[in-house]
Image (tube, rainbow, N blue to C red):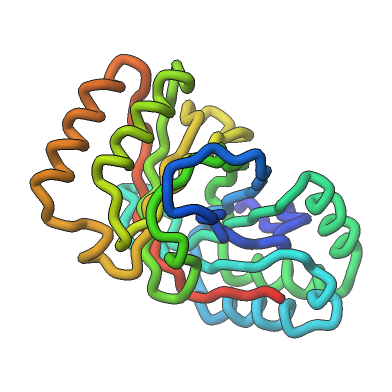
Length: 241
């Protein structure tokens, strides 16, 4: 069983996607993060581990926020839940590692997590700054996100095609972000597109115009990207300062 002790910096946890602008844009702001998927045998134990850590004096110095997400649908992947991490700089990763390294709080957290969950996969993401939609749709219990992992052979061509699509279907009911991926092992995905909404109905609107625009996007990028995976999440809890 792969132990969660490898998550040395897990307490910078967040998937607080930076949706700082309602229109498609490219930003110089850097967002780095890690996503950890795991099979949970004791959901209450995971919540207890997170709650105990974030209630500690040590956590008050942690610059990050945590989102615990349940996986609603992911095909035959055994993962049931996800923790995701974001930092505003690489220096914050080092800061969090130093903060947690060797502490009793971290040891207690890891022990409870190892007793409650098995890590199934992990990866690193970095925001490209290409976003669209409603900036008010932020991580919160009940928020839904669909993440589509892509293997993109020509990012320079894919990005404007994606921006053209999001501009055509712009809605106040959803928010999107395009991330670059790294550290994925044998997984061929290079990017992930996330679309978030506050309800399933808003995430999957029955809109013929939107479907037509999606079909046009698929035709335009069919030679430069492949869809590797899709996962549907719902936020369960948010922790942080």
